[in-house]
Amino acid sequence: MPTGRANDPAPPRRGAPQVLSRPWPQAGGPRPAASLSGGADLPPPSPPRRPGLGALFLGFLTAGALSFGGGLSAWIRREAVQKRGWIDDRQFLTSYALSQIIPGALNVNLTVFIGSQLRGALGGLAALAGLMLLPLGFFLGLGAAYGALHGTPAGVWVALGLAGAGAAGIGLNLSIGIRLGRRNLRGPAPFAVAGLIALAVGLLGIPLLWTLLVMIPVSLALTPRAEPLAAPLAEPLAAPPAAPPAEGKDGAA
Image 1: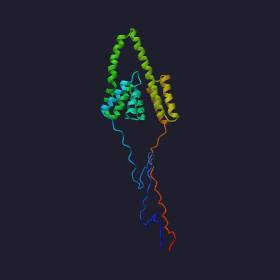
Image 2: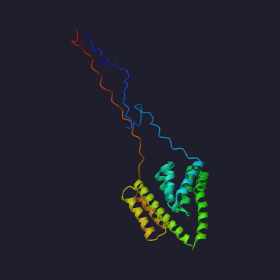
Image 3: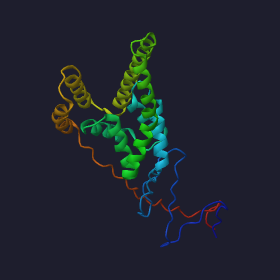
Image 4: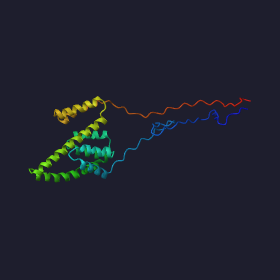
């Protein structure tokens, strides 16, 4: 009779199902897209919860209160994208472009558009109320004071202070343009389109509406179509070869 080793695994029985084990990846590594039995993919992450009307009001109230000297778009992006995570940079850039095409004040259009995206018509009204509450009261008082001080020595200092705040606003607008460009412009074609629009509107004085009517089709034609990425299916694992029968130390008796 053959005597096998105590630690040797027993050979699999003929016809018995073989269970294949697959090591789970380490923490931080990619996880398998599907189970070995062909099951469904892992559930996608749940979308972020929509903000309440009060949160929209407070967020845009903060943006309106901190945007001294202009640069309001940069503060709106800080609250909606960076700080609160309501939308991402691509959504903000799309909202910003549409707000420039629609007649009206840019930042008012942007505020109503973002609020409506998140909470409908009531969200747009809540965001607009938060944005305009403090600046409206502040500039009503400042305008009355500036009119009263105009032509006096104190009025000169007020004018210098407003000029310095305007320079800060220009710097904030440049910073938001640089940040959005670094994250959303990929390849030479988008940089060329952005440069042509800046040249046409900023230097040549062509109206923005006519510039966009020409450059939007050009941008769409130059933008490559991104194909949706499908989750890779797990490849079936081949069954390991059956272990040979264990032999005793001294061979068969």
